[in-house]
Image (cartoon, rainbow, N blue to C red; front, side, top):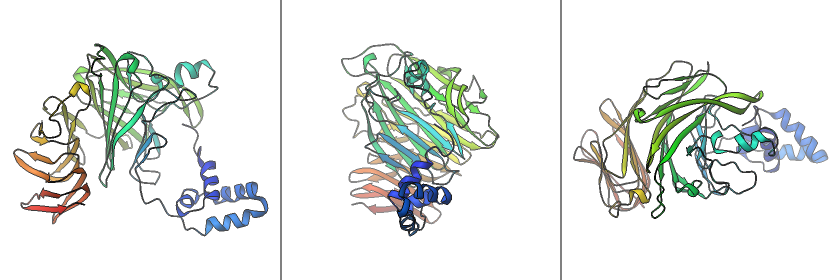
Length: 430
């Protein structure tokens, strides 16, 4: 949302005030600036302050993705280098002052470029462009309903956050469209270190039914040209260094719209930044499933997204990328999907059966290589159990190797996992 190094002065001040290996890591390439700021801010104490900081060898943080409850932000990150992929999600509550109407809006960075942009803010908060564009829902990456902005005061919350070695998952909702009788839930799965699955559900509360809505799934980009395939619904940017590919499920039911608006860039404000809207309309629930695939260079990767046959209250995807085939299984939430047996019933997802909140299964060369389970007790495929937990399962990650498998997670009881070559791996939780 600003020029290169926009946050650097704050990082320098933080490192000088609170010296630690992590802060030193973020300013290690800016020693001249650190010394200049120390002498400006601390005068005669500058040498003491600098010595205190330099006593800490630079060390990158020992975590990547994180949920920041107090701010209402979540960060899904693959690493700390400039080439890393990361997504910022603003799920928190808005207050009535300077806040933008952007509940569940995200930005994506990767390979040294901002790929899905937050338009930022330029000029005074009192100028017409601020009031009509920058602070309004239309300028953010989220689902807009009936062409209207979210309420200025919005309640948002995160219901589930999981960060594992191979995947991150967040489930959040907000009530910014309560005045229209609609409620928005967004789930994001980061399949590390490659791509993101974003699913959205627009539902209504019991006794607050409002009927027909026109929804639009928005995504903004840096200035440049987009390539849009009307038939497949795919969209990609066209930069020489790094780009973003959008692949929606069920494109036949979407209307793709392209427009241009204002954004803040390294050079300043630009008025020709492209954005797209995936239009979908009807009585709630209105759903979206979009894969966002960052990539280096100009060669567009082959990525396909196919919906799985599911029972009511569930959605599933088959995502094919250069890394393999991923199966995404999700249980839907909200009054629209009210199911008294939801926690005990195996739902159908094509050839899979699962009773949890979310699962991701990666297949390579006809063999399962990865499973991430969030909630539930049982995951089965073609009548064969892939995993079963006898206790409470918050989440579990299973990574298969030629010689067996490794299991991490938060669960109680016994977790039994079927090995690709036959046999079971049994692990006990807390």
